[in-house]
Length: 82
Length: 190
Image (tube, rainbow over all chains, first blue to last red; front, side, top):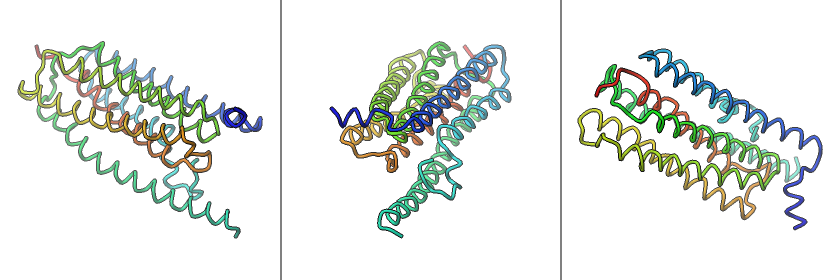
């Protein structure tokens, strides 16, 4: 019980703050993806704008690659988990 | 250099190699999915079959939401929050299963069959190959969850979690392009 509490409770306020910031970033990316999906759906329903839909798709993929897949870690010298 | 520092340096070196290997695997997978994507435009052109738009939007939203929870799981283990880590993994797996139910249980039971010419071939080829990757992703997540439950990961060492998360997001990126190609692009042919 004590061990479980230790594992789930932030050890320092700094760590808790870092963690909250990481969760917040994830939420912001989700909101951006949801907005882009809504725009994509509206554009798709309004006509046959293939190029516009591809551009929106590229933006969505870029957000996922950068913020969820951490692609920049590939050329990071530190080599940690990021 | 102390033994601990040396071990961590080795781990970081190994981590960079693992990461590079995983991304090389993704590049090879991109050829597979890219081929399917191109075949859609070659065979369907500027047309598409009539598909359930509500279902398409719903399963897309489910997959995006699952990516959010997968990211949350990865961030949780990176910041020593084990409870959120395990819960988020289970939510991600559940959303992945919901996505599969949407594709296999609903979309595949629609009016288009696999043998219905180009429409059937492309629709089932693209959704089938993607669903197979979602299924393998769900299995991967459940393995990571089981390992996490046993305490195999820490904030310093969680390559298994990172690999699983990146794989899951990759499957999401594929759907980001497949969804408009199947459901939104082109004129509906009835």
